[in-house]
Length: 317
Ligand SMILES: [Zn+2]
Image 1 (cartoon, rainbow, N blue to C red):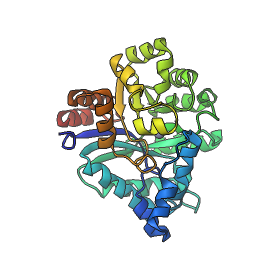
Image 2 (image 1 turned 45 degrees about the vertical axis):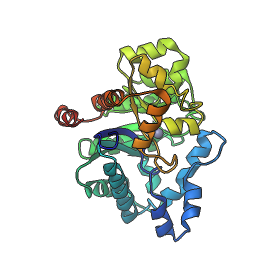
Image 3 (image 1 turned 90 degrees about the horizontal axis):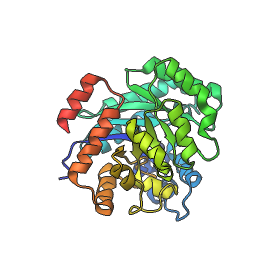
C-alpha cells in the first residue's frame, strides 16, 4: 500500500544521496570502503561528524559527466519509490573545485534530472553557513537567473551550531527583495532562537525545525502561520536533534496540527529511502496511511511550484 502511494519529497541533498556503487566505480575504490566513508554508522551523535560524510561523493561531482550521472541516478531512485515531485538541494559552489562555472553545475544537474521521465525535480540552491557574504550572494544571483527554469528556491545549510542563523539576515533581505523563495535549515543543531530568526527572515519552511517543541508558544505560532516542518527522522537522530524514533518531535508537531512532511535528508549518509522513513514513523508513532497522505498534502501546499502544478499533483496524491 505505502509502496504504491504517489509521494512528494522536499528535503533531500544531492551530495548526501549519491550511490556508493557509483563512487566505487568512478574512483576505482572497493565498495565497502566507499560505503564506510559515505554512510553514517558512528554511535556518536553529532552534526559535524555527519557532515564529514559528504567529502567523498563531492569528489565525483566536479565535472559534468559526474554531475549528470549522480543526478540521473537520484531521479531513478526517487522514481522507484513513486515520488512524483521532489525538490533536491545542494551547494553549487561545492562542485566548482575543478573549474566548472556555477551555471555549468546547474545545467549538468538539470540534464541528469531530465533524463528520467515520470518525475519532476526542482533544485534548491544552498547557501552555506561557512561561506562569506559575497559567495552566498552568488547563490542568490544564480537562483534569480534560473528561477522557474529548474531552480525553485534557495536554502541556508551547514553547521548551524557554529554559524548562528541571525548572522545571515542581509542575505534573506536580498532574497526577499528579488522575490526568491527560500527555506532555511534551523532548529536542528541549534535551538529555538535559530528558528525564530529564520521566521523573522520570512521563511515559510523550516529544514527540520524540530527543536521548536522546546517552546510551546513557538509551536503554536508556526502552526497558526502555516510554517512547514521538513522533518527527516533518521537524520535527526544521527545528528542528535532527536533522541529516538519513539520520541521524535514529529509526534508533537502532528498532534498540534502543524504543517509537517517526512523526508530523507540524505539517502546515502543515513542509509534510507522515503518509504523507509515513512514506514519507521508509522510503526514508532502510529501514523496511518491517511496521516501520511495529509503530510504529502502539506508538502505540496508548501512546494515551490505554480498553482497549475499544484493542482496537477494534488490530484495524483
Ligand atoms: Zn538538510
